[in-house]
Image 1: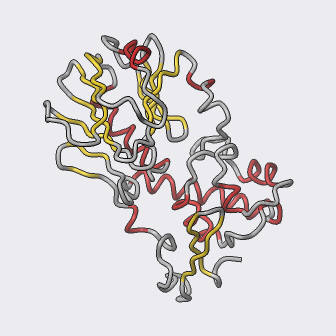
Image 2: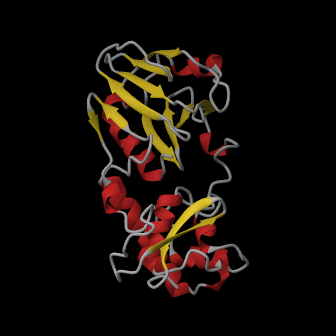
Amino acid sequence: MPELPEVEVTKRALIPHIEGHTIEKLEIRETRLRWPIRVDLLKKIENEIVISLSRRGKYIFINTAPGTAMIHLGMSGSISVLDQFVPPKKHDHFDIHLANKKIIRFNDPRRFGCFIWAGKQPEKHQLINHLGVEPLEKDFQGEYLYRLSRNRKTTIKAFIMNASVVVGVGNIYANESLFLSGIHPKRRANNIGKKRYQNLAQTIKSILTKSIEMGGTTLRNFSFTYGKEKIGYFKHNLFVYSRDGKGCEACGSLIKRIVLSGRGTFYCGKCQR
């Protein structure tokens, strides 16, 4: 599943092709995504200049004068930029045709993505308004995590993956952050001190930043494609995720795998306490 770095990479890659350009038309071939595409509402962005592209959580915002359209990549979605029309393939659900002759194409085999009209105040949309802080912004600090964790008996892994606490710390990055912070994923959130939370917050910021710089992980079905170029190299820098049975790079102990909250969880029993 695309996580926050992959979505941020996609947004940044799209900006030079779409920002400041006019949307000539929308071509919707499949409306049955996670939520039905409301073509009548989304048509409002046709013949409008894209003022900016932004991101909240895993949603990409296409901001125009009439309002904002939101795209979510879902479980298996990907976006391609085409220089000219190429016949759509299976699961190519919609195209955004730009006046600069670029085509933004959305592909999603599992159809868990979405294309939604969010109006003039997208931050108040029901899919957005409950989200916690952005992990790369200044409000995300160890003190913030420590304060929110005091009455939380859930595991630390579930706590930092809770989107109402902090957005975008998905399974891959939660595993990696906890390893580098030396925190066992089953440890209770309210049983961790402020100093360790300060370290964890900085580690999360560092890992997400590094992943964005390296183009994300491109695990399974995720990719951003422009021509034949695909981005995503962070998967070569993972310490514990999907490395069960292999030696820990810090101490040599075998990486273990358990399931927490239905998600594969990887850790070193010696390095993480």
